[in-house]
Length: 307
Length: 179
Image (tube, rainbow over all chains, first blue to last red; front, side, top):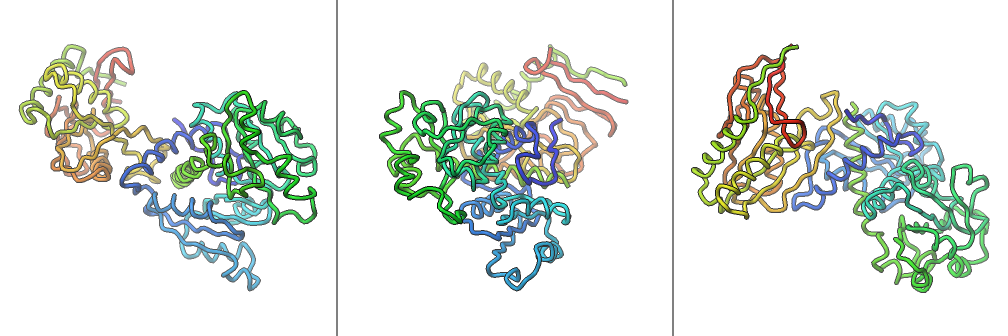
């Protein structure tokens, strides 16, 4: 009998390959649900979920919220800027106060790496990490792998290159771990300044030439340049970055094969990816968004069933 | 452990034939009728019924779907076992249609309650009927009865009724396993 082994989803690092497969199988079921005329199931009708976002997010928050509504869960939303956090309350106090109102599950995004793990050690509720600083973003990695699986039928053996700001990207770290667990080959590509030292220890190839990377891969995951996390200049200008590492139609057409283009959003059009590529048939960016809802439904459904 | 066979190969086809003729008697040309098997195990029986109905009526256009009740079950968060969903294959609405739900074993009636819940998410059927291969009578937790029954058996609560199909096992056989 298949069984989900986790009480929380803190990072891809902690979950097993069987867990990932179970999440995918469950998400298949939810994907048919969200494509029906009536897009809702009653599974989580006695579950209350708090969405606590200490950092800005549009896509992830809406995706989680929609997933919760499609599962019939009750939700409360909490954005740090409006809250007592600005009055000096600690993280544990804030969350405990919310839990005292009988909340079963917490979805949290926080700028500090490890915040979700810290919370899980002190709080008695299911915790889902919706991004903790530059550490992990597990649901994004799951939906990316799920989208690759949907496109190719399998993740095993596929060659995936992650291009861009690897240094500040939790999406990159979670993606690398998730794809490696599922048997894919992973390469990172970007300016040397944005590639963390010793990244090879995660079992990935490193390439600084975008064309070489594109010629090697089946899938290119173009990451956003996270200017808000860059305290110093890592490259001379955005224009130079986009000349060297931006994906445009010309580069795509010069390859002797078709590759799939992914992007975790939000897109900086004209920086890491040009509009004609983002809107082309190569891009599965909007499929990723759709799959995000199904994956998050699956994760919350599986965690809720643990109680 | 004690296993008693209640249906075997030949009886399977006799029962399926009889149930098909009962359906034809009631639904005629199946113009406005949809046949829906319950995932995961009811679909083996439902596909068998469908196949035989097509043979008898020579009507290839019977509406057929498979319903998964995982997300509608009332023991979610209460049981120890993980509920893993199966494929939902209904590419029509059931609005104003007569629906025949098909499952292999009717026991407490809770699966059928979940199925009724799941079904209304595909529209408002004109009528819903229930066909089961084996009815474990006097064991219902809910007021649900079948309209078409293969065989009726008396069982104790800790007995298990197991139905195996050629498609997923060696042969067609149904048995009661008691401890």
